[in-house]
Amino acid sequence: MIHYRVCEEKDLDLMYEAFNKGFSDYIVKVDITKDRFKDIFLGIEQNDFKYSFIALDDAKPIGLMLGGIKDYEGVKTLRCGALCIDPKYRHMGIATNLFKFHKELAAKNNCQQLFLEVIKGNDKAINFYRKQGYQIIYDITYFKHGNPKEIVSFQNPMIEVKPITFNDAYFYYEHTEKHHMNWQSDFDFQKILGNHVNYFGAFKDNKMIGVISLNKTGKIYYLHVLEQYRLNGVGTKLLNDITQRFNLDVLLINTTNNHMLINFLIKHHFEIQVINQYELYLPL
Image (cartoon, rainbow, N blue to C red; front, top):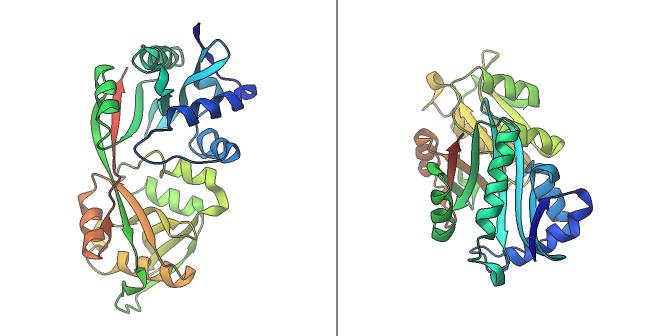
């Protein structure tokens, strides 16, 4: 008999089993250890046991819906961090039931919207979420530069790049024309990563005019230059500096409908990756 319940910490093994079954035929190969599953999906991605649901056939895990709540750009949001069903149990209404519990949880916690990401081309998932009322709002485009050492900046002695703190970068973000940031890149996400993220500012006459944040493998979470200083090599200098500083062989970055950043990346020969995503929202 199929039944549903809120997840608890003691359910980690069942959740991991349901996750592996549900994503066994996914468009992207998923192969992670249980510890990694916990660190990512119940850690840095900000899902929580108490906001997640598991479906069981008697004692056998057959479906999982992970959820996390936070104020996302000023709106209390319940995000679906993963929804998966054992292939043998699909087309039985299990996903619909999990979503029903998910939506009821949002109402109970006074959330103002539901949110999730889905891979472009995963039409079955997209159609399912649209039937639940979600709408595609943003495109997430992923870029990669396979040889960032070729990014050369002109030497402008008026611009200096130097390390800054998380608080410096966040203050800059809060006091500039903020653009939308994906859940998996925003400053809440970066704060959870802690010392794994490095922050640098571009300064002119002791004024911070640009910021970049990244990890030491070249994953960029935030790149921004004040509007009045753009098209003057500031962003290029930030990329050049961090590439040399960390001796990077690759740079990775994603952006959501930010045409200025997209044009900048294409100009510097970043390549759009095969796998990209949509962001879907359902206001409550």
